[in-house]
Image 1 (cartoon, rainbow, N blue to C red):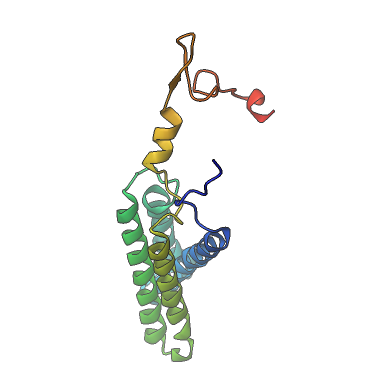
Image 2 (spheres, rainbow, N blue to C red; image 1 turned 45 degrees about the vertical axis):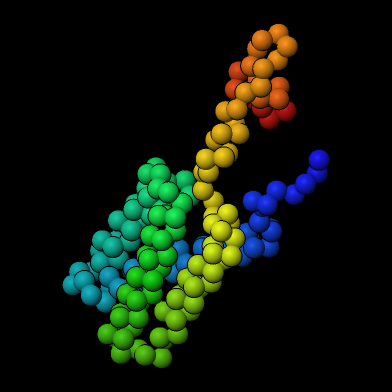
Length: 169
């Protein structure tokens, strides 16, 4: 039957979440760099690199959708949003420290986007977040017995799935 799965999320919400996430990730790097420039006593480039490079490594290894370290979805989401809040706060501290209070709207925008991200996650039950889910793995490894005794997943199991150039056809 052509029933729509309840786990699907509208493309508009997915695009909104992806856009907000991208803006927050870039904003986090900018906030980290600006905070480093404000508080570290090194040359500007060195200060920024001291903070931004480890942040990029941690993000890519632990918090990104294709991270090497696999965390439960809830754990990853809580950590991501805590990092966004910490980035907003660090940016606020840096701007206030420099006396440029007319730019305090930037951390407010970052915090607002973080709240929007949290709301999108809550409204969709986390289905909006790119994450390798257990049901996808279970579906891809499920096998169905054929009449001749060979196992396959609707004719396209791991043993019969085309690989390499044949897969593109």
